[in-house]
Image 1 (cartoon, rainbow, N blue to C red):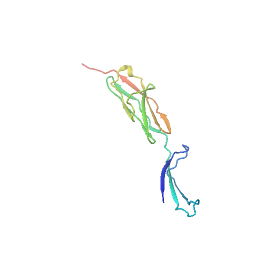
Image 2 (tube, rainbow, N blue to C red):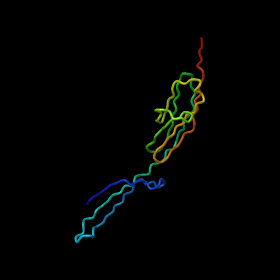
Image 3 (cartoon, rainbow, N blue to C red):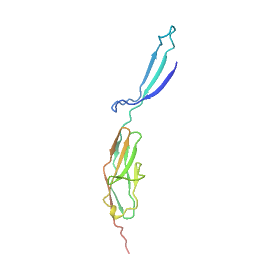
Image 4 (cartoon, helix red, strand yellow):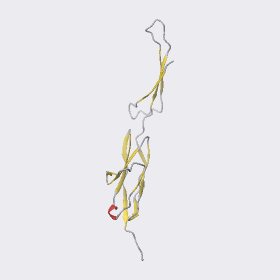
Length: 139
């Protein structure tokens, strides 16, 4: 018995198959002697779920010269992250958390969002605003 296995692509996103196995058996009739049954096993790959945010990034307040850490929690398979500052992608900010550089007063009001994607969709988080206050020194 010859077995061949391959993964079938998902036909529609809404067709979420956890696993399916189909066994096909056929006897050849083109010769005088019937051939042994051949089987093909087809495993349908489970449809990849689109990303969903379960915990949004939260606003942060830091003193001038300090750094802030933003994070997000999401569900889905094979997630890709891209953090944005006022809508612009940040280089090397491609994980579930992001830490700012040493913030200055001019950074106050910056809005940080994160774009999360996979092969079945994309979602953008709510904006988390950075507030930067002056450092207070006492004599």
